[in-house]
Length: 42
Image (cartoon, rainbow, N blue to C red; front, side, top):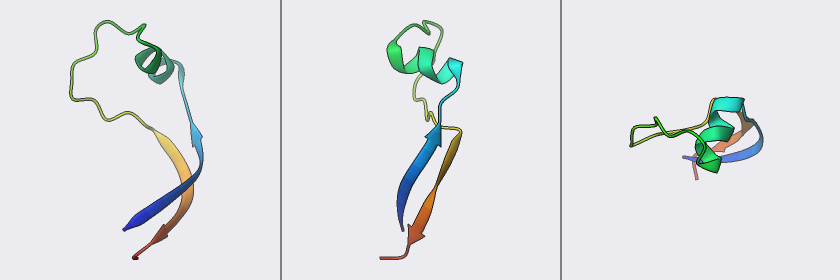
C-alpha cells in the first residue's frame, strides 16, 4: 500500500526530537502523530 501524505501535524516534542534537542529519546523511534492524505493499493 502506498500512502500519499498531503499534510501533517508536528507538535513540540516531535520538533525537539527532529532538531536534536530531545536528549532523552530512546531508539528506534517512529515519529509522527497526525497525517492526512490518500491510500492506494498499487
